[in-house]
Image (cartoon, rainbow, N blue to C red; front, side):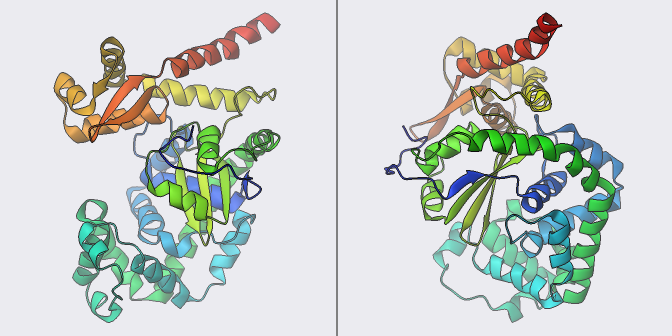
Length: 370
């Protein structure tokens, strides 16, 4: 059964595969430094790297990776990060701004902007001031997704493409040299093992939605995935060493790249101790919090609980409870379903048992072998 209610025919997935994708993969890790604040399961490299950077370096990193995301997103599959950097440095300054503004012109998240989705953007008006620029982003993305201070700073580079190019290329090369290059050399072998193990399995008889669930281990409830998955020319799964239990999708042209925490397929005969260890640490980090354990215990005792019931029971705000429930769901300890428009959660007994067995196999089986 498909992981969400869609009528999808069985198709051959000759255009769906798992690949390391060095440039896109490393770019995903670079992005985590700005986005993954205190999420359980994210690899320790992310937090350590963040603490090693100065306050100004972190602000600059966020400006480059979030403020100019669409300017710097890798656009070619199969390339190395070094080649990606060379391509960036060979890009004309005006193209950085053009990529950014073209992407923004096609994004309408708010209800208000969706009503006028076919209207062309008057960029002369938008770029006349920093205030107009930020208001445009709020109109398209929503105020909660717009960082006013960062976008005010970004505006100064948007109106000066030469400075924009110098900023993004200089920062990304600096970050690669000081933080990412050595880490990429360390993790690449295990990512190759993960991709190799998945590609040894015949995946052709699954729908793309079923394939997403099999590879990532997560059910996708958002209806938008149905159209995006089926309309994509290629669906490429990218095993990442740092993203943990979370998934992140990137659309480049007509291809969709889905970043997932590097692991081995269930039942695989391949053994990669570092992959096993990384996955165990990811799962245990979700349990190493009193509130998350309390939520799991309550749901186990009640059989099923809705989000508002959890919120009332532990006396926390709705955003905090949603975050905890999302973390536990991403790690697979909770299963989510819709009930009369609200989300309800049950304990995933199978995932808990498999986590305990994985810990036992990782520690006790090695003791027996010794």
